[in-house]
Image (cartoon, rainbow, N blue to C red; front, side, top):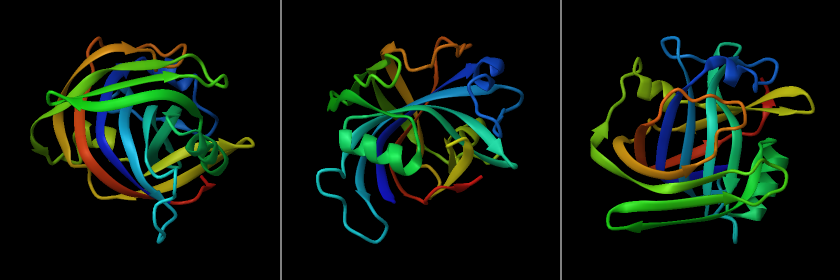
Length: 224
């Protein structure tokens, strides 16, 4: 599956490791950077959704998405564990739930550029998940960052697979893309109830990065 991610904010907070571990399935280990665990929220617009080698899907190729995530390993392979994925497209939500076994939820969402800031709002309205909302605005500041492979920015963003569970079996989907075109960012977050119940954040203000565009290919699920 090919897709493009546009105007993406990485907002990360240090989190109590035990509060994240308690929410992970068997077979996954929490991935730490210098002994610290991280929880992230990533709002963006998804566009160009398509089966690989085919044109974008009509009525499904562009929508808003907001992820809540942490970082894990299985068998020594680092990846992403999604606590939730909110999207403005009901078709995309149901399709991703069936295809990738991910906790997608339907949400009322809107985003738009105003005075150099991207204003972004999401409010979940799917009974399958906890109440969750995000509201704020963000923008890039500064030049592109070439993240050193040993850096925290690289640890948080350069992840090339995602994990899911299907009928009790741990699965993995490979993700292919070029290195992230990161920039430093600033944000004003008015509301953020995306952390799942029990997750303890250790920071008041998040670490922020921005990426204008990333083209990706996501492969089908396989056993991890």
